[in-house]
Structures are given as structure tokens and as C-alpha cells.
Length: 177
Image (cartoon, rainbow, N blue to C red; front, side, top):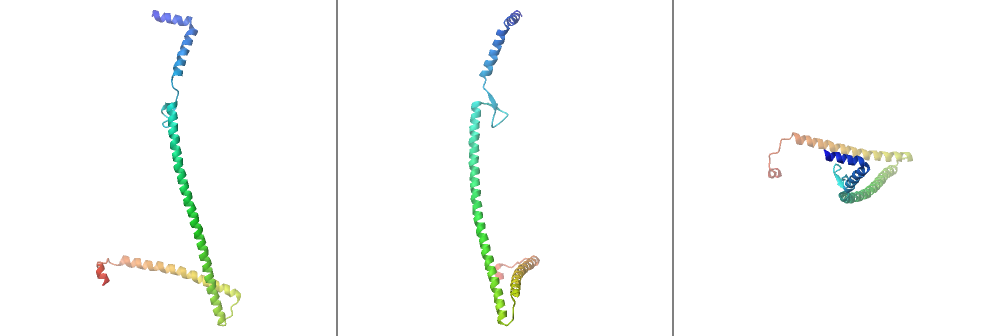
């Protein structure tokens, strides 16, 4: 205890020297320790500046590679979009051409009907020619709808007959003869 008493007495007598020594030790320990921060890969781990720089370089390279891959996907998407736009434009042009051809056909048929009627001596006024054109168009559309409905009816009949028929036990050779 005599040593402790002497040390405390020296600290009391030389308090600013003792404070300077303690501060110097703290500064040496603090300055000598490496600075650490949260890792970029795992924020729960503290890393030093060189490790942090290495992680940053690795992650930056990874992000650049992902950016290049995304750019390639964007380029591929743009090419698909351009191809689609070209096909779409061609399709619309084809539809317009077919619509014009259909209108010309309807006009030709209605003109033929009108000329036939006039040749037979039936007077047809100008307003009636438009009516005939409308009737020819309606008959054509009606025929299309009726053809579709008839096809659906035939499909239903075939489906019902197939479901109701017993399975065919004959071989293909028997069916041919």
C-alpha cells in the first residue's frame, strides 16, 4: 500500500503531467488503431479502409456487369419492338388493301346488278343503287355469319355423334375394305 500511496501522491503533486501522460497514451492507442466502418457486403461486420476499398471495387465491377447485361436485354427488347412495329405496319397495309379490294368487288357486283336490271328494262334511280349496294353488302356479311354458325352446328353434331358412338373395335385393315 505504500507504493500506491506514493503513486497517488505523485499524481496529486504532478496532476497535469499525469493528465498529459494519460492523454498521450489515449492518443497513441486511438491513432494506432485502424479506422473501421460497416462492410458493403455485410453491414454487421466492421472493416478497415483497404478491405472496404476492395469490396467497393468488387461490387462496382458486379454492378457494371449487371448493367451491361441489362443493356443487352434492352437492346434485344428494342429489336423485338422494331420487328413488331414493322410486322404491324405490314399487317395494316394488307388489311387496307384487302378492304379496298372487297369494296371494289362489292361495287362491281352492285354495278352488275344495276346494269342487268337496267338492261332488262327496270328503271333504277340513283338512290336505289346505293340501296342495292347496301343489300349486296348485307347479304355478303350475312352469308359469312351464317357460314360460321353452320360450321359451329356441324362441329357440335360431329362431337355429339363421336361421344355417343361405341368405340370402334375394328382394325384399320378392316375399315379400308
